[in-house]
Image: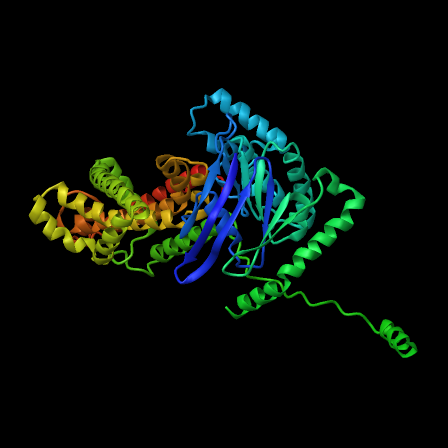
Length: 257
Length: 274
């Protein structure tokens, strides 16, 4: 199943946020969206996931999702969005409660998702008892439970410390390794984008327009190797040179706001 | 470099001083028995002052006289007669007001139409002291239990509605968006996200409405009732039976404490995740 951004334009009142953004996320493909602060990355993701109505243009799907997918477009949120009154297990089961699945089927899906994210021993724990990294693992586990075709990840690591980020990045690489699941990965961190994405969509400053689409010229498995580091660094520098001046302008704008 | 080394060596020979601790205070912690000890002390002083004749018993009877009055009321059956009348009014009035307040509060919290209409009415009617409506309610509903119950229900309704829609408003939007992103139906979002998310504010509202109900029942009974703690306190005051009057006040205080304990227990049970 492909996810298509079809000429998406969006305004918040007088403020133009996105301008004619078009690209396609193919099945099993990981596309990162980067750009200076306020360029509309998260807005674009909300539109792609059907949580926000664009001013014009539309998000579209092509093809059929995998038969077992319960929620083809599934978000992983920056702030985790966990129900604080529910245990880890209940949080992961939450998106399954309204489906036609039996309790046994639900349990099996939850079990599998918890196992894949290393949360089996924390099933009875409440979110407040967990570290930031573990909370995001619950968010990822909840997303995996519905067997998504495409994960929509909105800066999923930005609220975490660098060590936890590294650990979760390894998890993402592992989860996306077999190509069975695609992803749109919104981030301001170019290293994360270069580590994870097949293509990187670079947005300009507000209103966000596609400035360039950079293809990462190696497999994700190869990116862990020492020889690849230099190439990835060069790629990051290339993207940074595209957005640096606008990032400075965006920062000044925030400071003046 | 040499100069700096010399300075450092000289500095090392100077006597050391401790850094003054500046982080004390602003962490009020209540001791477990402190409050009870203070209360017992006040009662003891009060009793001693009364027994020694420093205080006229007509104006302030001793604690032991109040306890005796409560005992006599209990033995004679009058305590239950008055208490049951008040409890019935509070119970029915509170339940009616709470049910209506929760329904309207949720409607205001979830529906644009209900919000625009409801908030206008609530803002206009909430500030009215509800006891002022008792004569009107007597006119409408006749002399009997109904106007007293209606007064309590009205008082409880407005506070409940406000606390419920404030609670609904306070539910983090990201949780609702998360649920929507999984195509969770509206009713399930209300039941599984908004209701538990608003519960802390709703329970905090219950504390306030319990006090409102107590205040209104006493006021309503003082205006027009034969039985009830409010009526009893008023009669005792008219007859200068201050020990009985204060017995009624103590019973009200105990009732308020008991309600507070019940709500505290509910909070512990339902909000254990906080």
